[in-house]
Amino acid sequence: MSLQVISIIGLVLIFAFATVRSVNMGAVAFLGAFLLGTFVFDKSNDDLFAGFPGNLFVTLVGVTLLFAIAKANGTVDWLIHSGVRAVRGRIALIPWVMFLVTSLLTMVGAVVPGAVAMMAPIGMNFATRYRINPLLMGLLIINGASAGGFSPISIFGSITNGVVERSGLPGNPVLLWISSLLFNTLLSVAVFFMFGGRQLLGRRVSTDPAQQEDEPTGGGGTATATRTTTAIEATTLNVQRIATLVGLATLAVGALVLEFDVGLLALSIATIIILLWPGVTKKCVSEVAWPTVLLVCGVVTYVSLMEDVGTIEYLGNGVVGIGIPLLAAFVICLIGGGVSAFASTTGILGALIPLAVPFLQTGQVGAIGLIIALAISSSVVDSSPFSTSGALVVASTPEEARDTTFKRLMAWGMSMIVVAPVLSVAIFVLPGWL
Image (cartoon, rainbow, N blue to C red; front, side, top):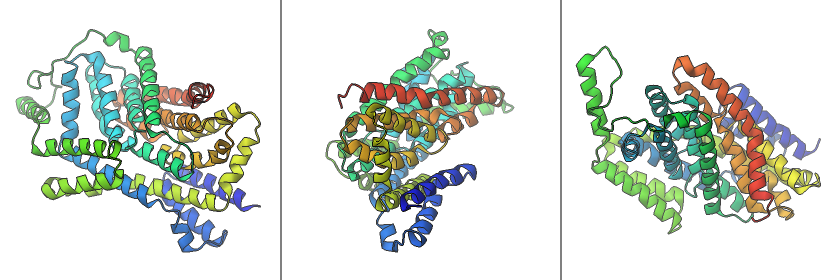
């Protein structure tokens, strides 16, 4: 058995063990890299560490730390309440506020599962209180996360653009971001009208925290006053929130316009805020998305090992052997969507783009177009309840509607495995304009 086939079997086992045992895929990937690299491929420790993505590690830590600070000091709450006020209480626009805020969060560096984890409880509470279809609210939150998730300073975008750059492929980070944003926006328009959005048109809710309807509680007037006070506090700006907003804006300008390193800039901004307000931010370091850091770094390290033994070229030549370029492109996107629906999108992005490199280097299809199609196909299926984002939406749904939401999300997510590759290949690959 060739080394390439052994490494492929190892990758399959990594996904299988991580999924079946519900453990971090990155940890399993490090285990696989160590065992296969040391005892089968005869690689040294230096060879294994050479594949560790140090710059990606700093990016993940920096942006998620800054996001944790924004959440801890109430900046995120302020953004949410500002969004609701901006639509003047129109219920039909509330799901779109959730879409917009979630996309903004991932756009400036929040990990997709982290943004969904924060927005899903808020959105599903809105859905329950104002009789909005939970599926509509959940899908707009998930699609919003994917819409912003490929900006040049986001996690998905950093991973995808980093892999593209390391692979020596032509890339267009801004076009990748805009394409994902437009695709998910149009998909959400379809979701809105398919799942009850038309019935929400014309309905309104008060935007004054002191006048908003309160849910019945056993606390009587005291509970109502407490909730009202909390709501009013969430709508006000203070020095910490202003500083955090300035920091987020600085990150966006510094990374997009001045081309500073995203990770170093985000980590620097986060550290300055921590130094200014250590009391509020001291727990934020523990809220960094360490599981995601472990996952991404582990998978990328294992894929680097696969590259080192020639597996990427081996598989790429196999795709080229299909003989029909468009069919090969569709197969790659189908694999990305199918695996990502049951596993981590961040892991899939780090693994599948290198697998497509030999095929892309033949020039049979546009590299930029296929990368965009693969990114969209692998992220849209996050709506599957077997994926982290879908599972978070199900968990945030009221118990009486949970089973129904699970079944509908499963049907939608499974359909996206096929629908997203078909649409993305037809739009970005078939015309040959990228």
